[in-house]
Length: 333
Image (cartoon, rainbow, N blue to C red; front, top):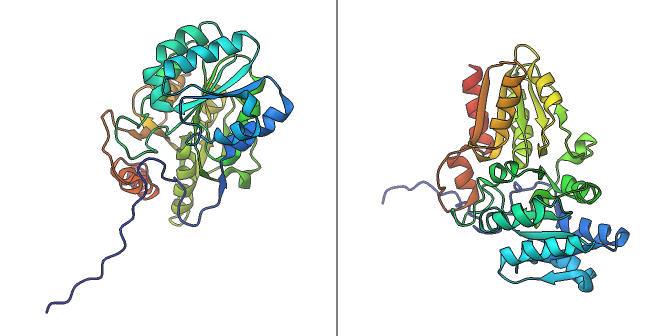
């Protein structure tokens, strides 16, 4: 009988609600739900609304704490957004949750006409952004930032971790007008507490400096960028990481200042299609400012993505730590 090579355990995750946390990584449970409860203690005008997805957007915690301020609208996202607009007109501040694909594709016109055009105080928090679900194109919101960036008057936020979500919730409430935030739910990685971080709408933050490459990132890609920077350190490559949590309005002055430093490759990394997201926004800002560094873009392809386990998909589409590290080493020569 011939010898056989022992097989490593196959890495799999639930396609729908898989955690993006690495094994052993620190996490915090349901940061959005707990932050909204705290906000509800301070503001009686805050209400929670969802389209049959309270459990899967952590809004069920708010519903349990404030059942009289929770509205379950059923699987009718257009009705959800229209009702939220009506609530806002009457003085409430709705925090609306659903999946990002349903808000940005199915209910886009209702948000555009009923909420954004009227500049109403509706806060939209949407789960499964980008490639954080393995259920395929029906649930992968790979173009949501492009859609919401294009909407006049809409503030767009892509938070990195649990701490930023907790900080973003009261900041959204303090901001006058509609806000769209990508939502990480369940056990969310905790990263930014190590950097003394404080979220501000419209502000980017340099998390670490380095002379060789500047990684400009948002959302979960900032977590990946920090991991990549640590890996590059071992090869004496100094990587800076500029976290840009607000996609609109963009912190152009900080981006231009950091990209203007000579001798650094500039890489934009985002969990979004190559079209219409952070990469194009940064490229336009640099072009208009007359700044022309060597520039690369890590993003999802302009394609309908496969279904499967998230670790496999992140490798396949180039947003895992290992694949990103290899690409940066190749670019840096």
